[in-house]
Image (cartoon, rainbow, N blue to C red):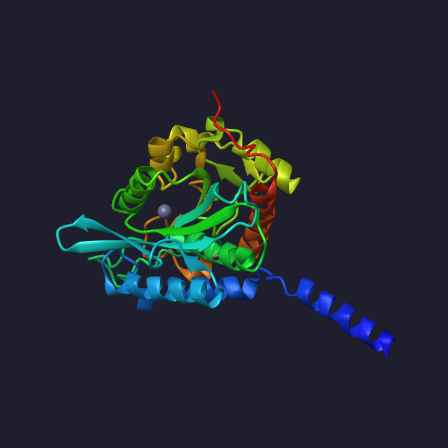
Length: 308
Ligand SMILES: [Zn+2]
């Protein structure tokens, strides 16, 4: 009898441990093919197409038990008269009384440039830009949803990035006015195709701005983030949704990316399609990033800091 009880309780413990979410190629492919499908019409801010994407992402947040950070998952803002955009924000509350108020933002923009005027295929599906980053955030949200983390995490999908970082500018200003305690922000852009002949998995924009890459590589025990000369040359640090948070809050806020200007010819092109994405690469990169973030959210000190 005792032996049987012991067996049952041991298998229960084993079952609860093994039920943690695994980031799979299947799940990545499902989400990516949906967001980059013609039905989502290239996800231009304010269109029925991006509304489909928003509803799709909110459903995943809800099904995984992630709460809205504000009243709903939507943080709305006005782009221009009559045009409303929505950032989507899910909240994973930390469990450490002292550390849970330090918020970590994991972000990506989910909007794209929509339907083009010329050509046979008019829909710019934006699979690499930035359904790939969006799916990365969604997979990370699913990964951390059931985990106990010391710090709290905000999973943010920005809108109106393509119109000039309008969604992130709005949210950075809002959070700054609310005095939200954002520790650091990691933004994900164009990760659907691997870098060629680089010793690291992704480059980090604003590499010299902080010790983020050094700390992160320490967390993963891999050469995850590296310095890419062209990122500095083209000032990519200032060209994505990380930048308004750096400006408004003076925090380490950077973007990771695997687009190197020569590994993918369809930037802002109608041929930026799901079929060209390297799902195996994405699975491996997102898993590596998940490992790093897990250390980041649980370490005792806030070790990621801006350089002097
Ligand atoms: Zn982009």
